[in-house]
Length: 83
Image (cartoon, rainbow, N blue to C red; front, side):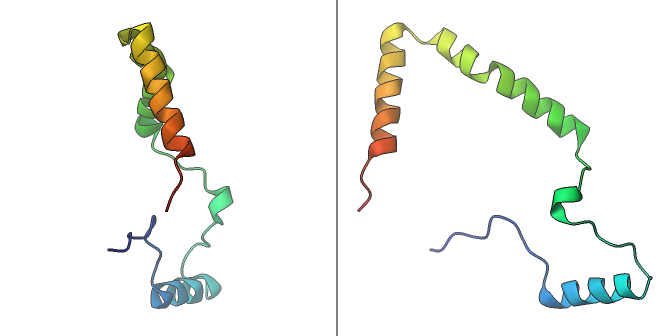
């Protein structure tokens, strides 16, 4: 089964309609993706909180032998030959 697209893109008709509305001044111009700055502050805070403590907290739970095993498995997965 094929994978679904990572992001849903607007339909061609939707894009044409939005372009027409922007060109005639009936709607505000849509900024390019690189210039969009609005982010959900709550989501940013949750992401930063989890990212800061994730690896450190996981390492604290493992014994040295478990960390070696996890690193070995990760290296095998990275270098695994795909057929």
